Image (cartoon, rainbow, N blue to C red):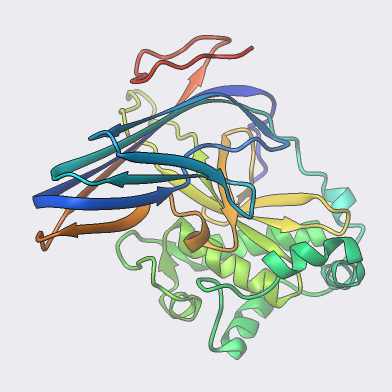
Length: 319
């Protein structure tokens, strides 16, 4: 497993643009999404703004059961183009994972400790049971795969590292071969997919082993190839997972990149699986048989109180 070198405080400007084009007018549109980064022990949101075109008749915000901020939009007049642009300035500082502290428990002992501690009852109920997109029909297939990547007598931290490295080794990153409906059983056969797929596999393994784990949606800063400029919209939303340790801390691991999360990672929302935290989803009324979706994400490092020129909404930056 890769050892992260990207720790310490950083400030980012994040811009997430989602655009839909329709060949026929949409007469009614209802959208819900999780686009606002959340405050966590590793990050603080300094400013945020949202622009919707055409302007919605109704726009409400509320906090869901997991503590994420959810946006709800309604548009009740004809349109052939919908664009949602979310911007935020976020301070990020992830600590280095203390492997020695985590390895005080073996994986098996950690599972027992989590099951026996009354304080973790809610976390076990919310993040320890199979969920819609992280359940399996073939428990034997999941168990067989889990045995190839982790052993019960491994230290808890070592087991997380082995699981992360194992999924990165065993599954090919291949966009287009899966969808949001792909099951864990299918993934274990395909051995390919994208970040949300690898996260669902890891969630299923950890929960089968008795470790509560949650799906994390957010962003990761990417670096362009040497000698090339970073293209606008070249970053993408990302997914990883967070596992509950016996001391009550959550440990974030990224099986897509084979590493623990670091200060390049920005958290938007977390839940049981992708279905809980989809960036934007909804229902439309239209005669159109097709639509065209375009998504672009920018994660731009900032210096001090600098606000990048790519901003499309006025942000009030706090200190």
